[in-house]
Amino acid sequence: MAIPETAALYAPTAVGESDLAIKEAWSGQLFSPGTRQQFPPLKMINWFEWDKNEVEVQGRVDWTVTNTPVIRESFTTALPDWLRYGPEHSCQPRP
Image 1 (tube, rainbow, N blue to C red):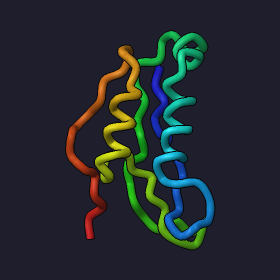
Image 2 (tube, helix red, strand yellow; image 1 turned 30 degrees about the vertical axis):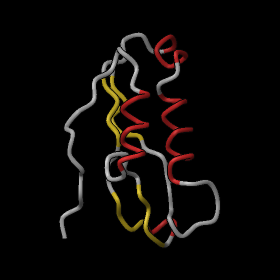
Image 3 (cartoon, one colour; image 1 turned 135 degrees about the vertical axis):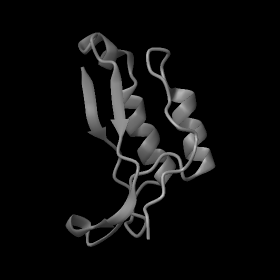
């Protein structure tokens, strides 16, 4: 079983919580013991790792967890033992 795409919506120009707070809340839910208990066959979670303009919010959305060192560290530290982290380099959109 896999979650083929997930991420936390952070729009830098929007008013609200910080990038770190939003992504920690999302990963906290995703990596909670309840997720593993509810979906025991889960073997993969694919994070949507892009920083791009989104029509729905009429602006930039930073979906990434690897582009900011403090967020990357928080994310990788939160990974439960039953998951593994992929490449250790930033995923940057091509110009």
